[in-house]
Amino acid sequence: MHIQIQPLDEEILFGKDEIIVSKTDLRGYLTYANDVFCRVAEMTTSEVMDQPHSVIRHPEMPRAVFKVLWAHIKNGIEVFAYVKNISKTGKYYWVIAHVTPSYDSAGKINGYHSTRRLPKRENLQFIMPLYDRLLAEERKHSSTKQGLEASFQLLVDILNEQNKTYSEFIWAAGE
Image (tube, rainbow, N blue to C red; front, side, top):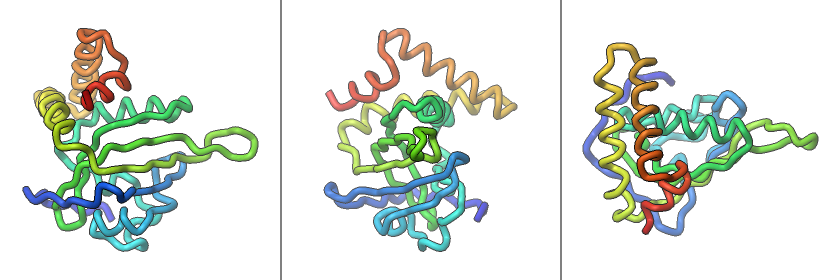
């Protein structure tokens, strides 16, 4: 399902008490998606199963955030992140994601589990300018790899300036 979706400037909202749930294998391919995931992504279960979780990645989402996310969960550390996703029809939706590793009976990471809620609007007003800045940095570079590295370094610099870890920074959005 690697089709190019044309983004629309139309937001999908879901209930503040609803939880979007998904599970992936170690490569990030979907092994489970709940009904809320499918409804908000405007896809059926059969359309999302065995697809990369990035099937819902919005092009306006800075890749540096995903670099941080993957670094955390691959090392067994839970992570929270604000994420702008895209639906099958091009509409967007914001989530606050809580992503954790899943473990087998031997204690080895065998996949990842994510629960997502509707973020508070005031928190997005804090996050969106940062994401715009990171994305602008990414787009300055002709190489996607260089863009990712430059955007990631900008994020590291911002965190260092504020003397915060990524998690502390994300939670500061709610203050």
